[in-house]
Length: 210
Image 1 (cartoon, rainbow, N blue to C red):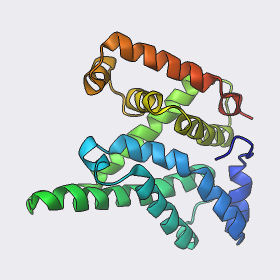
Image 2 (tube, helix red, strand yellow):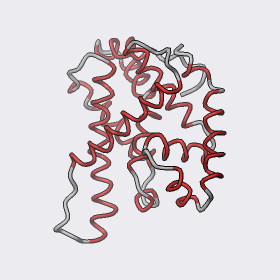
Image 3 (tube, helix red, strand yellow):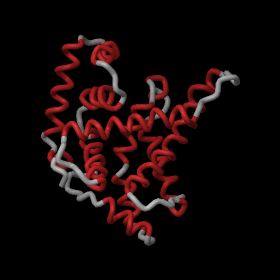
Image 4 (cartoon, rainbow, N blue to C red):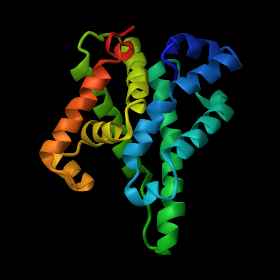
């Protein structure tokens, strides 16, 4: 989303439930980077070489647009949970298509509950990360809109910064494990992480709760 776009999830959701296609488009667009952050955290390097997180998220948003009448919830939190379930199913299909099918191992089955557990855990870590950076956000609506803005801010980071933030705060990896993945020292990764956090804090539209 553009920096100039005002996020009003609750209003857009109410309008979309009332039949507004424009509001539905805004609502789905607002969640794009939120879903992309969660999808990226669930994809290992083998899957990333075969399909992009953006592709899986685009498919998710198209399905959500098509099936919006099936959404029976009323709150932004319920809506994001509904989107996550569509994302989880698309992640499962991508893994089966690009990884398991290539191995031709018919005995191996992928559990949707396992992917859901990991994705829900990543979503919870993203909320925890928001809380550590902005303790002033109190209402559920404020938290949800700040999560959306935080996801946008993460998406705008330079690639290396974005990867370190996702690995550290969304996947919960230790600095030493991130260092091994980047073939760098733990100290170097900590410096990248500190710069990434500083860069995020320069983006006030998510941290201020506006």
